[in-house]
Length: 232
Image (cartoon, rainbow, N blue to C red; front, side, top):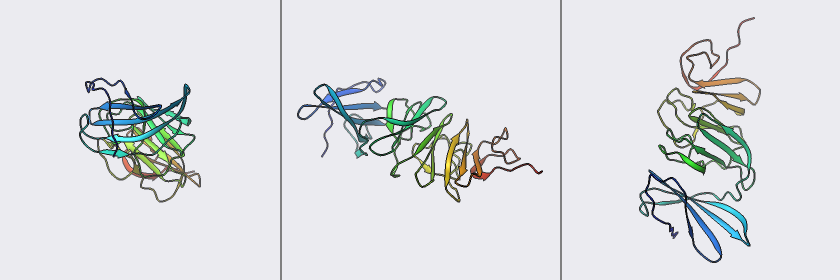
């Protein structure tokens, strides 16, 4: 089994808690939140940081609940970053292109399976997808693209900006965008999202009250719809 140890902290204290375990210097970073904890392990040797490994997440309070093993991410070096309304996301360069988010997480737009509490350090997006090639942060939602051109979105979805055919207040885990083909690029706005097909055709979904979907009408769309070109 996996044993985790750390000093007890009030759950309103968001500061990381460090512990030691094993031979040499192996530290566990435990971030305590309202609905669980994120656990990372740091390896040090001869004063050098050898790497950071994401272990997983826990559910429950202070030692109770279950522990879920996550994916190893190696050293956290980002290939790209995207700043949203009050959160930030990025894709790592080495050890697999994993997505990480931090900042405001009230609607689950950090994508780590939790909602409600801010994330003060990068937290790994919780998904079964092998990797992402890009990520884009909107005001309170996030979208990412896989190497095969499949889009995923998470966070606030009240206007359909997640693109999976549903409208709901919060979604803490990535949901596949309902699209008929592959995307080559994704972009997120305030409450809407857009994507370019591999053939260069634009599609948008989410809030349309200001015409931001380009469909010639105002209603929100919860799945991608083609942008309508004006008649010539």
